[in-house]
Amino acid sequence: MEKHTPFFNLEKATLSDLNQLSEMEKICFPIDAWPLLERIGALILPGCVRIKAVYIDKMIGFIGGDIRRFSGTGWISTISVLPEYRRMGVGGALLKAAEQEMGMPKVKLAVRKSNLDAQKLYLKNGYNKIETWPNYYQGGEDAVVMLKNVQIGNA
Ligand SMILES: CC(C)(COP(=O)(O)OP(=O)(O)OC[C@H]1O[C@@H](n2cnc3c(N)ncnc32)[C@H](O)[C@@H]1OP(=O)(O)O)[C@@H](O)C(=O)NCCC(=O)NCCS
Image (cartoon, rainbow, N blue to C red; front, side, top):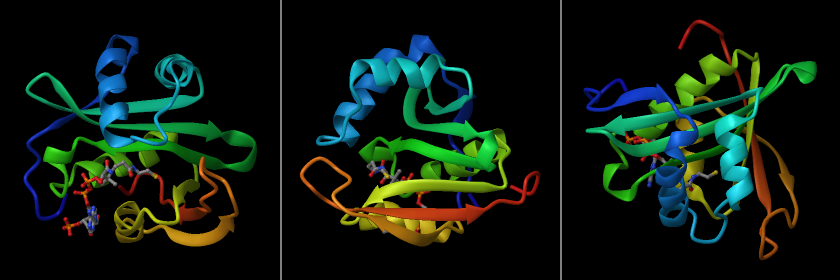
């Protein structure tokens, strides 16, 4: 958010955001959209963080994360920003907020090998590629796994 003045708010998402999250998934993940149960789980399960970016009462971005305390790892399970609000710092702000709320020293995520836009966001935010999971995604595409060592409290 260094060079952008935030025009949006970050808020905790709840089950009342299910419809807007479903719309966002449809638009942002034409191939990998979560099934309904996973969307509900992301909004209600304990041990998860769920943060939405809001602009004039509308969800314009969302991030979900799972806290895995035994391994000291937070997993970013999803991140999306509506196309018309991209490249304005929303994704980066969601990422930092989730890292801080999960409170784990390591944060990991998996991303399609071909999704270079998302990989640029992660690289810019301090993530490094650590491994590849072959055939991970529907259609057989590999996943690139990325890791960040997080300084808790220093967003
Ligand atoms: C990936 C995504 C969340 C990025 O959200 P965003 O709000 O545009 O991200 P930001 O504006 O915070 O981008 C921060 C930086 O990341 C990099 N970046 C992000 N999107 C980029 C793109 N399309 N092309 C090149 N660099 C990009 C840039 O360095 C950017 O900084 P800059 O705009 O000052 O150059 C968004 O493109 C999206 O929702 N994509 C579809 C869903 C998806 O693929 N999610 C990830 C699944 S693993």
